[in-house]
Length: 460
Image (cartoon, rainbow, N blue to C red):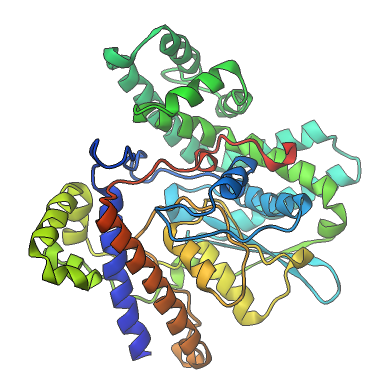
């Protein structure tokens, strides 16, 4: 245990440095990379999508996250993975990464499926109840009591009702970004004016219909103005990317409902008679002591990258650049960071330790967000051989290793965890060396799937 705790402390120092690299403003000399665009608490998209899979096949190694992806055996299996991710999106009601939902599908001995849910949020009963309601609606659809459009609309409507505060936040942020764009006369042309007028009409000052707003955002996908927004979002003007992100999230309820209802028809034999279970909310699994990152960034750099101890000039140059991540540095120096077990990592740990069988023989864990940098590394180094999900590549310091509680039951898994963490550390240190040698500051623009605007797998 002492060795594992020591390695975890090393991991936190390394990942703190990685987050500083990702949040440091880039310059024109930084290979044209884009710093992280989204505001604090922004949210990513819903896992594997067709666009992301095409990117994987064309470019399997992303330089900003040391990962590769295991291939999914068939299009039908890819749709099953998308089905699980979409279920997670429909049960995700809270803000940002604080309420992420993960779902695994267990094949029981009697042949029936048991869906298991967990969340980063401490409140697990609401998403569990909603999940059961969604399965009941799917049962009505499969029995012919509801047609496909009615089922999609009802599933989306119930999810939107439960996520009303989240949608209000999206609307507020979208309005703010539209206002910022209107003020930037240098980037404001006739095409932008037409686009902003359309979006602005959906966002009245006072009363608004959240169901209609989400439906319009979904219908926006694939339109001529959507294509225009995609082109604008590919430029250096980050406001367009943020607008597209929020449009995608507002439309994600109908998109996820479509994937789930169409998937229910395809996977009727698999999900008919399925039950729902849950495990302890992953936010309560954390038993770590909060910590702060020290003021001495030079020590952080030379500890994670020991070779720089012999190159003081190079170390000073790196430290000067990292000091540009002022907001993050302030938090690291003044706010205690308490690691939390991320939902998908908690679910993977549950299936592994309980030796549960996966539905359809696919070792896939669904999640309402694309995998973060550390979850992706955890999955790739785990001996269970999980299918790796789409990944935003974004590093978060508040990440905890899932472990069995109480500690007295951990003895048989300690060596396995130690190997996983050491393998993760090797990958992070290699990545940091490449960041330093390549002058990689800022974070590359995220995959299209993480905007929530990608075409659902069901249309592939």
